[in-house]
Each structure stands twice: as structure tokens, then as C-alpha cells.
Length: 246
Length: 246
DNA sequence: CGCGGGGTTGAAAGGCCTCAAAACGTGTGG
DNA sequence: CCACACGTTTTGAGGCCTTTCAACCCCGCG
Image (cartoon, helix red, strand yellow):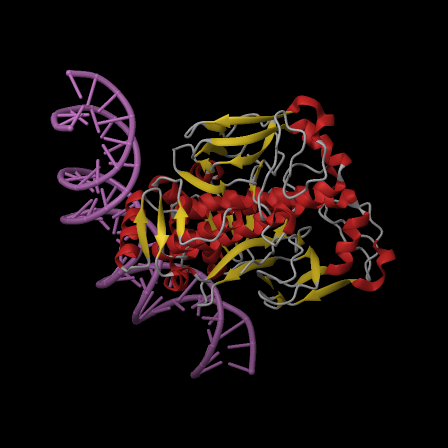
């Protein structure tokens, strides 16, 4: 009844070291990894329990309810974190982009599913070993704590979106958010990649596909955005921000 | 644009030490405190930056947007954690009960408000000093991390509630939740205290007061609950669980 | 006794959902 | 190169759940 799970992005407050390029896992098997912005770690002494892997789009990385025997960091691509009810209703609880950590909760059982939105490269780290690592690396724990707190802040921000915002506001906020997240990884651009289906977006925002689609069209009609393949282009940032502010 | 804030309950996984009675801050000024289930801390060496305080119902403990110069642990009473949009729409992001920690994020600025639902006794801990404490107490950081991860799990559970559940399900889930939380603190009982107004509950569940009220009446009419002053009595636990399951 | 805050209930409106069909894009095979 | 199939997206029409607006009740308090 009590699961634990979550994802982690790089902390939202500036961490100069990783602002530029998140580059965990340069080798394979991994010798060094930037975990939540913490680089001072030589993974080699943990042997081969860290692996660099690749999965095709739409494949499952972790399955809700399964034994959690690993944690992950995303190297490239995008991963959808979602939680489902027995009857199939789904809520997307996060989107992991390059540099993000998956498995912050260190729970025994995954309380969420993670599916590849695009082809994904990621590092797999044995959970038990990672847990031991934490005992030896208090600074890593501190980073993980900071990341977790940051995630929590984001989660609460998302709650007000789900509970109190209209469809228009939800979508506008989402687009601005994605823009900012990509900006952290690449560079700021009016073009916002959306490696998600309408269904995914709907499940993220608590809407149906139809409403998502209609809202996209509406924003496009208002010249706030232009709909392009696999994403959008922001035409009126201020206008969009007026909707998604708060 | 990037705030940090949150609350923390005792970790959901059993922590035998605190299962029974959360009793932080036995003296005033505080000498010892159980912080997120971590008791091995002698606060006295931090001098008088910890204080035991009491506030009347409805008073404000922290105000969204204000400088965060302290963190807190609740001793008795209940505290509402909420986040508001500029236009006044509000989302309750948590309810802190005795034993809970407020201020997990350690952010510079409060991203949420905390108001006393009842008369509240709590411990106030200077944030800067607390931060120093973390440098000296890796085990405390580890507890805080665990608590934060647990909070995150709860937050994600709440997201699916806000995004994907009906009013009936929302309320049923909420009531079962409160029942379980009280059970941790006192003992299990069919009677569930609700030190919240309908408005608070609505803002927690993403509903209006009217819908909350109607749904209460509906559940009462179905003999699942009985409405009593300042709370409810659960008449049909299984029936309620059928609604609030998942 | 009248006022104000919270709660309940009713009627009507509205935003989002449901059901449905058509448009679009992409990959496959003739 | 086109025809076709399949999955996704868009658009339309209608309905439902929750909200909105409003009235009324209850109760504590000045």
C-alpha cells in the first residue's frame, strides 16, 4: 500500500558544474557518473554493477509493482514516468530528460512505470550497491536530498496545476516548462520538442487527448504557438506566460 | 520562479522508535528533538536557536514568498500547507500532524504557506543553523532524504488523485488517508478527526466547497460514513476502500 | 437579537469528457 | 510510385460532472 518511487532532475537552483552538458557515464561499463550533479565518485570500485544501456522508443524500463533492483540516470533521450490505477487510468508523474535520475525513493518496489519516449541511453546502477554507496558518501546523500527536495517542490507545483488550473493554463504551463527544461540541456529556443503523444500529455495534465488536441489548436489559433512535427514553436512567449504564469 | 518548500511526515515505512508517540521537543528551549525519526541529536549545543512555541488556530506560521529563516516540527495540533496562485486560487499541498517536519526543502524563500488548523505547538529551528547541523550529522541527512523521498511518493500519489479521480473517489481516499495518519499517531479508530473546513478539504482535493459538502452527504446517504462534529465516523470501511482503492 | 462564518441544498451553466468520424502521417507491399 | 493499413491527431456533437450562483440553515458571539 505504500510505494516509493520518483524521478529527479538536476536541482533547479543553478549548479554551475552541470549547467552546460550533463555527461554521466562516459564509458561503458561506467567508471564515472554525474549523479544529481555529484561527480566526485569513482564507480569503478563498485565493479560492474553499473551498466550503460540503450533501449528503443516505447520500451519499458521499469514496471510499476516490480522489484526495484536498480536506479538509473538518463544519458540521452526522454523517459516517461507514470502511475496507473487498477482500472487503467494513468497519471504521468514526471518526464525524465538527459541528466535526470530515476529511483530517488530507493524503494523495494517500483511505484511507477518508466517507458522510453524516444530511443534512450541510460545508466543502470544496482540499487543495493548504490545504497551502500550512500553510506560511504555523505556528500552524495546531501546531493540526493537536495534533488529530492527539488523534485518535491516541482511535484507540489504540479499539484496546483492539476487541482486548480484550466485546460488552457495547464497546457501553457506545460509548454513553458518543457521549454525551460530543454533550455537547461541544450540552449534556449522558440522551438520546443515534445517527444510525447497527446495521450501522454493528457495523462500528465489530467486531461483527455481530445481536450489536449483542442487546446493545442486553440493556442495555435491565438497565434501563441505554431504546431510543428514532434513539437511546437512558441510565437508569443509573453502571451503564453500570461496564461501559464503563477 | 523557483521556490522550495514542503512538509514531511514520518517516513511511511515503519520506524519502530516513533510508531507510538512522536514526542519531539520535550523541553523548552528544546534540548532534544526527534527530527524525522532521528533522535540522536543533542540540540543544546546549538544554543537557543530552537524554540518551542504555541500558536492559536487560524494563525499563520509561514507565509508563501517570505524569507525562510526557520524550519519546524509539529508537536501537537494540525497545520495546513498550501500554495496560492496570484488570483487567489489555492491548492493544499499537505497537512502536517504531530511529528511532522515542515521545511524539508531548506529553500531561501517559502514556496508555501503554513496555517494552524487547531492550536498548534511546534518547534522552531533556525534554518541556517539547521543547515550547519546537516554538515555534522550525515545520519540526519539520510533521515531527511528518506523523509523527503517518502513525501515525494505521497505527492505523486496525490497527483493521480487530483488528475484522474472523481469527487467520490477523492473524498473517500482522503478520509481513508486521514484515518491511517491518525492511526499512526493515536490508535486506529472508526472516528476520523477532520480539523479542516470544507474549503480546506476542497482545496486539498481540487474541488469546490459545495462539491465537497454534496459528496459528504452522498457518502453519508450510502451509509459509508456518518458525519459528526469536526470529523466523520467510518461505518463501512470496505465500502469506502472500494471507492478509494487503487 | 442580529450578525458572521461555516455548512447544506437547489437550479442552472459551463468546461471537460465521451462517442464518433474524418484527416493526417508513416510504413508496407503491390 | 501508388494503394492501403494502421496509429495518431483533429474536429464535431452531445452529455455529464463539477462549478457557479443563490438561498437557507445552524451555531457561536457581541
